Image (cartoon, rainbow, N blue to C red; front, side):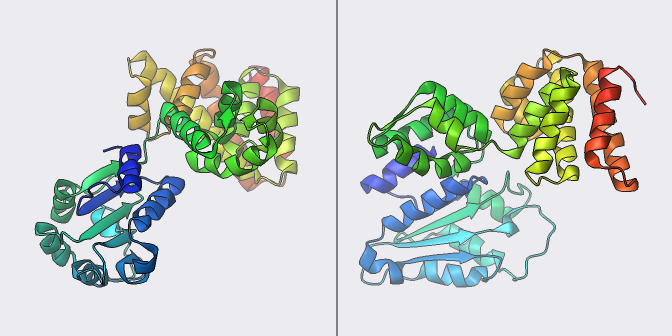
Length: 343
């Protein structure tokens, strides 16, 4: 089941399953779904028939007791469970002990009058655990963690249509680029873009460039292109702008290393026939970043990518072991890289 299908079912009062599993870390979509699930309970009944429990703070047994109770003067009870780490293979111990066996018993015969929703902000569950296997078998699963660029475009376009707005295709492309196709960031930007476009209600590219700041990752991606173009002056200027924006030098360097590592990985694996989708799954990277990496890596030699990657490791070491200014270290790195030096 897709998220749009579920949202439509919730909005139109369609038949709901007794158990849902929402997988993925998209904050906006999790909040949107929680609001939608809550809305299926009439406002005057929500105090008694709607509840959400954080498994980092509340025992599972408390949530299940609520789920097993009959609705209080209503037709349906909705119980949401957040952070069910006990379904994963994570080794971090939760502060609260959970009676997982009781959940297995409940899943064997879920309450027909209760909608039990698990919000699991994880890439995957531990398939070796009996409770995880049983939940996957019983629950209707919606994956909100692997939104492609196309999905993001469609979701934003639908929201704009619902709000009575349109967006120029170039403006939407610019918004995607500036937010790294992060739906949560994009939806956070929509209200001010809509306000700026009122009363024409058409969002143009200048509104996006004027109101939406690029993410650090996108700024560093631009810096990567200048590094690979061996344009020392522009690269150093961009680096200085990031420092003036109060970005931490070690953080900038770490993201630079990550971008070059991604370019190397995509270049090597693309030659082996891996598609964009397979690369995203294998490298655990957002499909939009893979798309950009595939476009960029074609323009550069593997030797240059490797040289830049290793040079940035030397910069990191020097940042941690010398008193030289980060801007000076980066300038020296660019001078050596542009000149074809390896030391």
